[in-house]
Length: 313
Ligand code: FAQ
Image 1 (cartoon, rainbow, N blue to C red):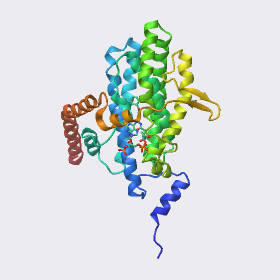
Image 2: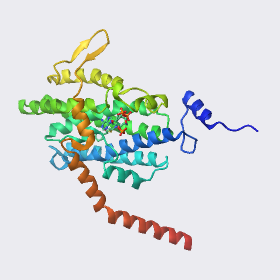
Image 3: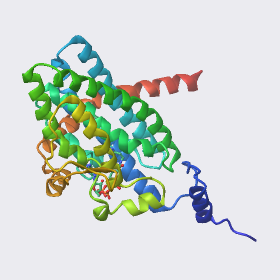
Image 4: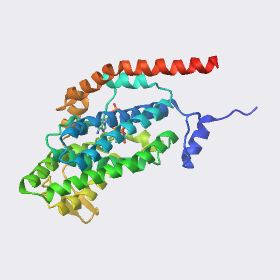
């Protein structure tokens, strides 16, 4: 009697660029890797609502307020698609939230920096969403079906977000001298933290080998960081702003820009909970969860009432 070789079926699917779906057999480590990455990605979207949400009431015009409100709401939606994709791997929403609230799970380092001025909101849209798309375009073709499908919609929305930020930055950069200097200050403060979003250098990235082998990641941290710099430097020049790093220089041989590495010691501090806003961000999420308890209880009671009515009918 022949036995089914599940591992071989899994490997063949990967080799043929086919998706792995929730009910397919998959190695335990593939499942764990995906739960880690997708849940952390979801937490990033939700925590990422905080720095910009802080500016909704202070947006400089009705138009910018409406656009920012829509953007922040989109980020909440992204978190929900991603939590659902992770749930399809056998982890519950409660377990994921508990991991966030007890600092067992990470979220993107970038959201631990403060938004001091309106130009920071512009810089987040332009640079942070720009970096997020650079990383997420490849994730549309990631090997796990539910993650890939969530990313297709997320990328469409993120590209609107990037334009929102670039438009706001353009207004400031071509505005009064005071506005231009706000834009420059935001660029200077957000440049290196944005480069950190792509993760540590490839040689210090413990998860990359498996991620690339399993087609979870299709490009490495360093490749994406380089592409982001190549794309963004001409935009900085167009805006008439000074480059935020004296070592940025076109390198003909590599067909890309040379640039300075971010401060990786600072990065480690931030991802270990010691960045400028880590405590504030985590407290905001823990309190929101506590304060929302009555909403969850009411929703569960209402769902039960509907079920009881259906059974009785
Ligand atoms: N921040 O071995 P690697 C957004 C951790 S969404 C914090 O290279 P990997 C939308 C990493 O988890 C932004 N931690 O890891 C938005 C690992 O620790 P662990 C989020 C980081 O997974 C915009 C350790 O370091 N995007 O911005 C970071 O292969 C505006 C070693 O690293 C995603 O999550 C970091 N920057 O590569 C929302 C995309 N980098 O988990 C609101 C999906 C690394 O073993 C407003 N994720 N670490 O304890 C990915 O592509 C990958 O997970 C990377 C990291 C590239 C983030």
